Length: 172
Image (cartoon, rainbow, N blue to C red; front, side, top):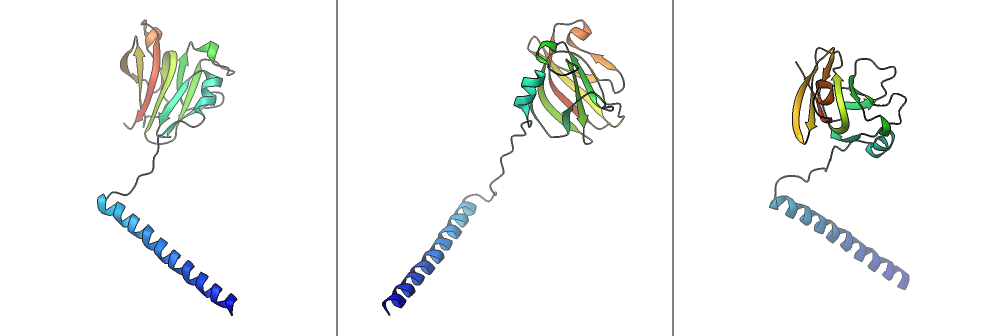
């Protein structure tokens, strides 16, 4: 009998705890939405995956983007945005100083840092307009990159060395 009474009492306490816990959670959730009607947002910093390894292996910094411009091996890829740099000592690739970016949508954005960049070429897609933002002596300049040919900037245009800091692809 004593065991049965203890079991019933424990069950009753657990039931009250569950009910009051649910009520507390419900009231906390209601209080949060009553104070501000916007739901909590997910935090996405758009940082480039594997950026630390790319910096070690290739000597460039890929900061953030929308996921539609991806660094790929230049070997065997066509229809990619190509960038050349004299950053050869820091790049341990088989083709140092040559960087290629695959566009995976109608638009794309990538914030990066390729020091001593001097020319770029578009991805041969008429549907893509490519713009490169470079800094020369700390001053930013945006350059329209040719779709089918090479566009020089920095030392490739007879200027001081440039750092490529942004690639942006838009539709026609």
